[in-house]
Image (cartoon, rainbow, N blue to C red; front, side):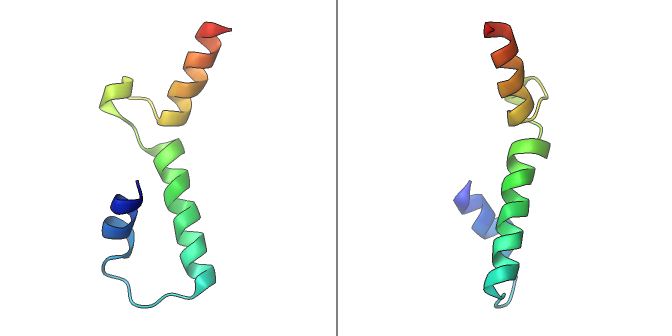
Length: 58
């Protein structure tokens, strides 16, 4: 994830403040875990897939 974050989110950005960088990293992590749909996870986001797996085993 970190290599994608550096390339896709920050490669064209000029120097950011520490606070702005932290906000963007948090937003990227949120997107990566909660919004990014994966074909290999049957079109679910990673968080949805984990929740689905927990319900099946409970």
